[in-house]
Image 1 (cartoon, one colour):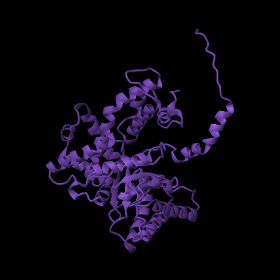
Image 2 (image 1 turned 135 degrees about the horizontal axis):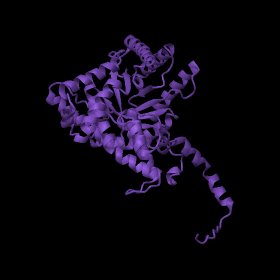
Image 3 (image 1 turned 60 degrees about the vertical axis):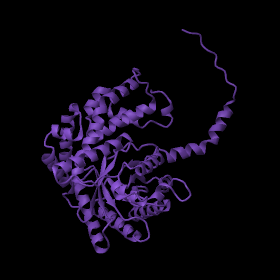
Image 4 (image 1 turned 90 degrees about the horizontal axis):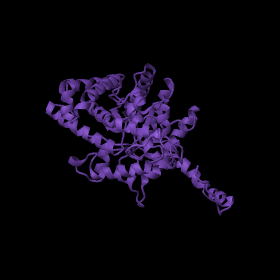
Length: 429
């Protein structure tokens, strides 16, 4: 046993106490503004369906159309892998999981869209019908895990209509059984933080009118204008929008085509991998980091329809854009057509399957203080466990195989993925 070192200090305890007192407001501000990820499931995509086309069979119809596209254009694992460039050791597994997902849960997040092409009695009728159908789907267990509407924005020309549709839809949900747990609202074309605050006031009024818990209704903010990224005073307006939501913001969704058009990008070059898109999403990502607000990529408008050659070309594009987004930590995106969801799931499943063993072994070594050829820190353990949890939630990974390779339970993974403030600078317990 070595010699015990003498430990000496020079400062009175009052010094530490004084410093802590001086930072009390900052500590509170950190906890309020940066609570960390909520630890709930984030869907891998959002599907938008026009309100007049949405019906009780929409979710199943999209799954059936996606399966039919596979049957016609990639009827087996080898042909699908050849189109996308999947490695041989992943081809069968990914293809099987994609087909199973399309049978079981073809849409993870569905948005009934009332932003465009509506007004008057038609919109009232379809919003009320959507509320009834959504309620019935949740009651029957056939709804997408997350479902809601996109209403019109808070700009003057359409504001009253957007407010009314929100009211009609939410009131209809309450009349048909209550607000589902997976309810999501999307506020589009936000330009000023004050528009976010206005929507908060609307939701507050609805909650008070029906005796709901304060804060029950959250919403996503769609970033589709240049002013949402860079305000007139040179600041990042999107960061202020998160604060203006007063804790109700759940996501920031990038609008590929509206944002690109706002900057004057020619139609042929409007895409989620354009430099303008990368810039906007990077600002969104930094603004949202640590706040509990998730970031979603946009979509591609190249549809996989027509000849097999064109479908394959569109699939390769969509697959590549999805993999690119995942590598940049945009874990959600939009899908505009049933033919997009086979490649959405293929990209997501391949992303998690190919990195699974390495991530699991690194996390296991960290948790067991076993060392290895990579020196991981608490922040990396958080990233590794989050990666595994996302893979489990979407169906890319099975809980049993993760448990077997890591020796960790779901509760253990949750603990590593959402450490207490300060744990990221400490060693693992």
